[in-house]
Length: 286
Image 1 (cartoon, one colour):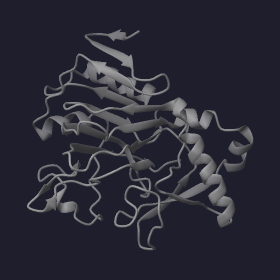
Image 2 (image 1 turned 180 degrees about the vertical axis):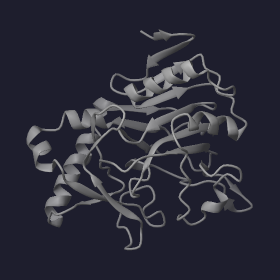
Image 3 (image 1 turned 120 degrees about the horizontal axis):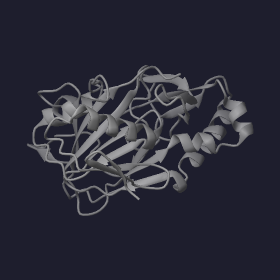
Image 4 (image 1 turned 180 degrees about the horizontal axis):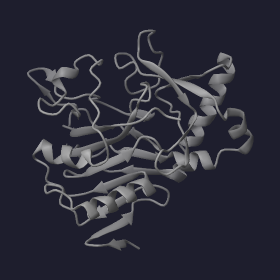
């Protein structure tokens, strides 16, 4: 049953993750009490969805995203990034397969994408990311979200003890392994973070590795590291705590990178796909 708070409604998207917010028009500033209800729903559910939004102006999306924290800058290390980013806001970029004058207007244009957490290869990964759907293919290109609180809570106790306090190296090579796990070059950006991280707001622990970007466990022999990582990857991708979002134009979805992973399903590359993304700067994981 949907929970009624003030003039808005909050209802679950899936049993283990996600909430839909109904009754909010983000083309107008949110009253503080309404925004706080949305923020608390986000903390409780890892992701929140607001459908049917009319955000023709970038600043409307940026204003809403800024309520979740300091806006981060788009990572300028990726080749071609200048043509994918907003000319008006440093935190805005486009995810798209559309080409204009032969050049892509967005990042990550095609195909399936492994589960990952945004910018986990940096010292301060993003706390949140927000996507607004502008053009969507007739099928496919769905986004899957996995609850990493549940992944941690359901890990075997012996594995929790074995990995407690350990770190894993995360690396991202956009040129060679942008969407599927692969060997990264030595110069690709990388950073080691705790395998189990504590959320600064909720105080809950989450499993903080992912198939796309986590390369190795610090201090372990390569074979043991690889074996344990694949065990963790398979565990965290359990369908029991995954929500698959089928996009519609006007959908706005914000997720918490500190406690959930996301992935993308394949879609017809001949169909146009365009989403606008904002990021919120996070803290160094502990």
